[in-house]
Image 1 (cartoon, rainbow, N blue to C red):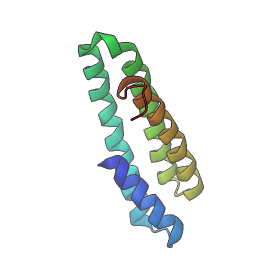
Image 2: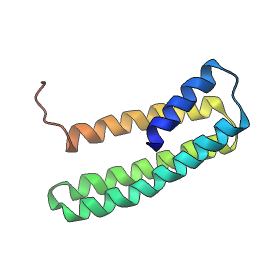
Image 3: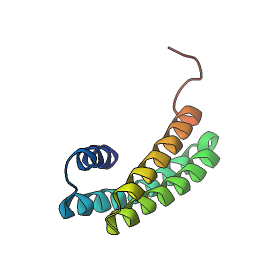
Image 4: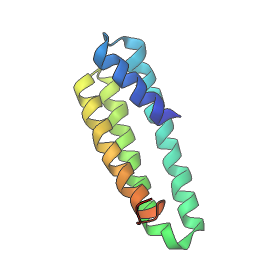
Length: 105
């Protein structure tokens, strides 16, 4: 939910005028994503097969979430957009490795 909220709010702010409450909400949601990384690491530890990948990716996502939060704190729309793009790429990479079959539907 936090990731969807960040993306939706960023899209709105890019088209409309960015507001302080939008930056504050993105920062809050990014901090919530950081909490998710702890759950990812714990779940990875339970599943030995994906342990290394999840540990690595949860660390990457935690750093990405912090980048988004810090950009929102600075009220830098450009930095938020860049960090969200980087995070999307990292999420796609992890999901491809861990969650999805490698065969096309």
